[in-house]
Length: 406
Image (cartoon, rainbow, N blue to C red; front, side):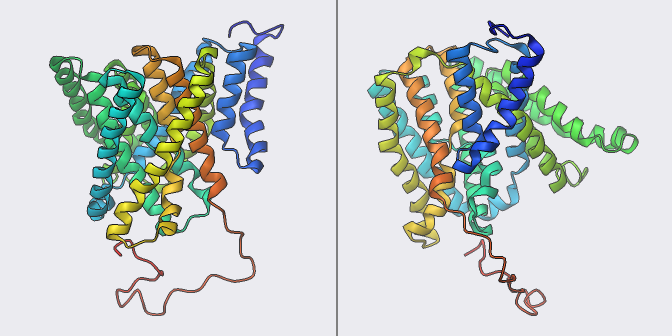
């Protein structure tokens, strides 16, 4: 902690816990996401009170927060579902990639940036924060079909973004890119062996240890990928995907119960990540140029991102624009990915402050918009749920009114 005025350490930490776990919940009634409140509290502390600057405890809890968010996102990856709907998702990814290239080119021209930081800015502007989106789906009142498409498209987009991020950060030389790719490949190849060893030598003699094992492996791999130069998120996400694929050998690791446990873990530590990200802001990040940058990003990219979701759905699922909004609006939040990119741009590329400030303001708006625009239907306490169609399951017919394979 640094320069906490007239307050000893213990009461200040108690005040921090109260601020991060009570104040955001109180503000949810105004449809302000808890992540935004935690981030604003960090910004107020860093820019005004100057509490918790360079605090090792907050930094450690922040690392747990970002690791848990991407572990949760990786655990929710269902590769079989993605393959089953690959035609729609490939159209979606092709449009995303084209949008990423166009955005990076425009950013490079507008802000006179080199290609690598321009690509990072484009990633910050276009990549939905999957872990945050998955955690907030319950509060948006979406149907099962809409939840499926939001989840699938967000995960597919994040997979693409992580690949682009890895190549961009390691592409200074061909040798560095090859060495980093080899290191990542070795880590991915060792993960099944680690899970198998735990399943045979530890789990039978240490019941209910799967959660601690999964979190520790995620943290270890996150540290490995940070040393490779691609931050914590890649390692944590890869561990989540590996655990999901290993569920046949160790069902509890990839189970719904484990997913909920990791989600609860993330909900506890994620506020520290957002608070710490707010602490990293600087006064020079915000000014007239930053506000103009944010307004430009919002004016151009918000309609563009909505169209990127609607166009493939119109071509393959024949949805109207209004129907597609129920899927595109929940995919707007970029807060987590944007904050990660802002940290990288500041630390490794010395990006102009007005670009960083514009990205932060843009991310805050895109994160708040879905909770305001996606109206949650009121609960219907009088009408019981309709029973499934009689005999539908025996005849191989769907028991619900929609099908993912429309």
